[in-house]
Image 1 (cartoon, rainbow, N blue to C red):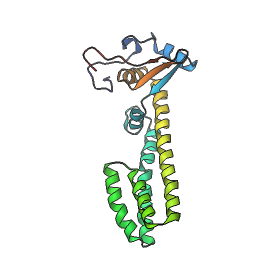
Image 2: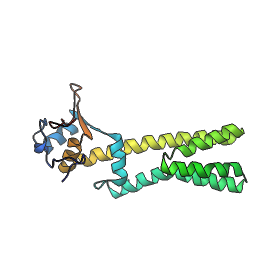
Image 3: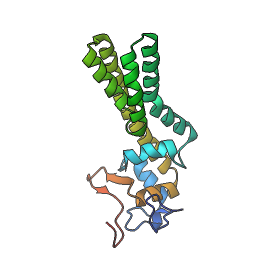
Image 4: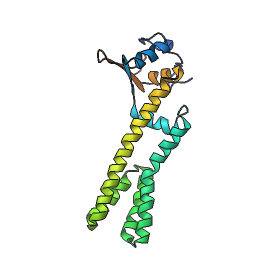
Length: 191
């Protein structure tokens, strides 16, 4: 198995990892179960893995995909509302904002709508938009935390996956008694 970092090494076992404090995967699992260590996960990698990863469970890929669609569903709702309510300026604003959001950042939809509402003085809709912004923020927090927990659990159930993530510097180990953090070392010549 090629490790995620795209390097030259193949790491499929804990014993393949240089200077790793545990001799077997079972020792690592036991240390985590007893609370001696905590496995840290790179949240950005975990989010991408949950939606696109080979080892990501199908159910969680679906949940991640739906959560990524929430801002676009908001945009579609605003388009429908603007047509029904004949708010043509809102309709003309949301189309380019949605186009930009697909290319750049989905949450720009919410920001664009909020700016429009502030400029036009539609305070009831502005409060609704603030609620949507709060939901969007909550959605991101949930997605990052959920994906981190799922990746951690999956890694602790697969030695090959754990080794690959650790070597790729996507996982760290926190020793709860000392507070020390251990991550993969860079091979000589890399930085």
